[in-house]
Amino acid sequence: MIEVLLIMLLFSGAKQSDFSKEKTLFLKAFLPFLVIASHYCPSIITPAKNIQLLGWFSVSIFFFISGYGLSVKVKKNRLKLSYLVNKVICLLIPLAIAVYMYIGFCSLFVEKPLNIDLLSDIKNNYVVHPTTWFVISLVYLNIIFFVAHSFFEKKQLLVLTVLVLLLMLSQKLCNVSGTYFMSDLAFVSGAFFAKYGEKVQKVPMWVIKVSFSFLMLLELIHLKGFTFVNSFLLPICFILLFCSIKLFRNKIVDFLSKISYELYLGQIVAAVVVYHYFERGIESFVFIVLLDVVLAYVICVCSKMLKTLFSTMVLYRKGKET
Image (cartoon, rainbow, N blue to C red; front, top):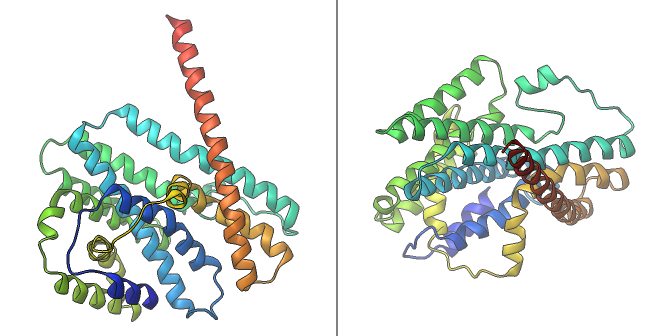
């Protein structure tokens, strides 16, 4: 985490630019690898606590981008139920493929059988595949966003914030691990930035750098309860710094951004295969990254085929009914 801080402070410029599509694609392309590093990078490279914080930070930025993207979309067009349904389907189909992959590879490469308790797993936002909490959280947040913007004409951001806080409270009362909802406020942060970004960008760069450094310091000393607040504030500071960096879009960024979601889902499957042949270390980490790219592409292609098949079946049934 300290490394991320130093890089951001070193390469950030004096002036900010807009949070453009190119910058969004760049983050989507490379954030999954920070998450993978937080799970599988050997601690000899950087302290283990820093690696774990890197994972939380990366997921928070993912949620920020999701909240920001939806908020920008509703500025142009009203959010329809069909969009929500399609969004949920696009989240669940790749997850289903990743789950079947995970079960299949575990049966081949893991001697200990999977202990599947669906009721307990669903309660903990975890369905067979270890990273499904991320997907389920996104489904919850997309539904909440739809409710806030479809049934409330005024103060939609306030309603969204209240509903997300109620979701977090309900999960806390159900004894769901804080790991599964500590980044939810980053989604609200993205919606906030979409609405007030122009005003926030007027803040002097030195103030942003000092704020970012201070928030990172508080996170590193593990101030109890502050992570939830930081999941709202830190992504905004990061994005403002990130917007001051000059980036160049290329084919690699375009390719990786298209399989960004699948990279997150495929990492555990890649780890199951790689750890069957290698001990945990730098070598295994490199192989996990490479195999994950391949698996993510396979999941992406299969998902597109299933979505096309599903759409064809729906159109066929509608045509038959008429």
